[in-house]
Length: 454
Image 1 (cartoon, rainbow, N blue to C red):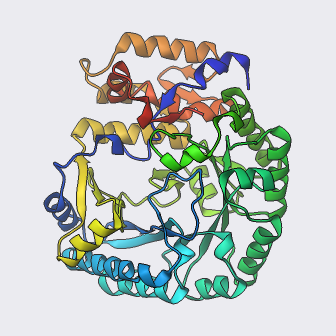
Image 2: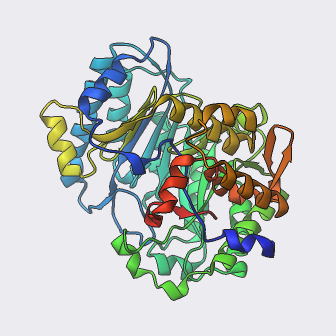
């Protein structure tokens, strides 16, 4: 990490998995608005489906997901009925419109449930909405709940890509985050996946965890590379103990400093590129033959609530508590709490609780920011046409860009801005200077809503 970049390490920046972000959601968007958006989906418009499974058998202290610890799957069974009912509700509204491009099970812990229960969800999607064998079905897995038989069963019901929550291989780091899982456990999971015919395996890794240092993380990187997953998602741990109370179980003094944290990210970037992976966006890596790498090579890379993806569907339909749907500029989020979600679905109503409707400028700006983050390059003239003179702070933008260029974060050539490859980690921070909404929020600093830039 170059010393001149240190000043940027603690500057907040939105994640930009949507625009406007979830920070702007309000109750002006409800079931009526969500229903109208569903009714306007075209006959052959691609739809990406997200299924939220909010249960875990143990609390990971770093986790910021919407989840509940539940050790008895039978007590969680009514939730399955609610998800199936919600899928039927949405299918009745769509009435055959839309084409499913991908299905993603996230959590929580999707493999908390038996494969036959997950198959019932897939069956309901097939009956109510429809999908083909060409639609990838992706699932996040907790390796501690994986067995060889279970992995083969998941492959048998149609799961085509499996993502393992690895985070870090070091036993002491694992103890510090309350997620103990040996290298041998992960290795056995990967072996079972290969035997089951899964040729698209992903690892989730975190940097900035307690007790991590360069030597410890380098060992985790070597072990990751030795298992040869097709994809790797590398995220920075967001420590927000004021907002996420169980993160108070992680000691502040055990966390790497901002500079150490950035060095860990750079260490991973160097290791994965040297091992033959391609950098996708700014926090994903993939082997060149994968669908996401090809999408990046061909300029088709997209970004949604799951991060960078080859799935270019503009419509995302989320099922389950807190799941977010995105349709034609509307962002709609379900009720957060499982009990509220189940009661609303049981009453026959859509579970939408809040959201936001992007105005024309916001929709165009969201596309522009996506282009910058996905391609690491964008056209400045296009941005000037999108943002009205009274919306942007032109002087502040010019100063920011001049400073970024002087610090070798970006390259400005004519009308083009390019984020330098070695500065990818600052992509969100660079995008934020083009976001007038974020700039206005910074005036009354609500930093709790944003993660670190790196």
